[in-house]
Length: 211
Image (cartoon, rainbow, N blue to C red):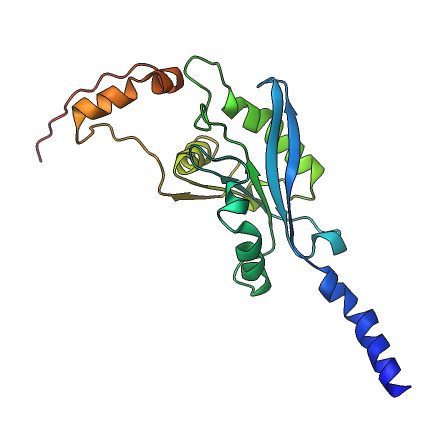
C-alpha cells in the first residue's frame, strides 16, 4: 500500500511539471489584404503557456535571405535552445514569432510598391499575433531581432518604429555601405533587377574627407 500511495503521489503531483512543455507551431497564417496572400509564420510558446493564464513578452525573430518562416525552427534549433535558456533562468519566458520575410521585400516596402511588407507587418501581422496569443502588447515587452537580411530588417523596424520596440538585436546584418570597396562590382549588383525593384536605381560617388 505504501508503494502504491507513493506512486500515486508522484503521478498526480508531478503531472503539472511534465505538462509544462514548450512548443513550436509552424502552421500559423495571417491573411493579408495588403499583400493579397496568406502569410505563414512559426510561433514558439514557452513552457508554462498551456498551464497558465499569464501574458508574455514577445520577440519577433526575422530570418535571412532565401530562407523562410521555418528557418529558425529547422536550422536554428529554436525549440531546444529557447527552452533550455528559459528553464535555466538565463532568459525569461517569452513568445517568439518568426514571420515570413519573403525573398523580394527585405522586410520593407519595395521601392516600386509591389510588395508592401512593412505595411503588412505593422498594420496586419503584429495586431493579429498580439490578439491571438497572450502577449503583453506594450513597447517595454516587445523586441525584434534577425540574421543577415533579418538583421537589416530588425534595425530598420527597431529604429524607425522605436515607439514599438524596446530592444533590437542584429546578427550579421545585411547593411549596405555608402562607399563600397569595389565600386564596379557593387554597382553591378545594386543595379540588378532585384535591387532596383527593392530600393530603386543607385549611383555611387566617391566621397573624400579630410581629418
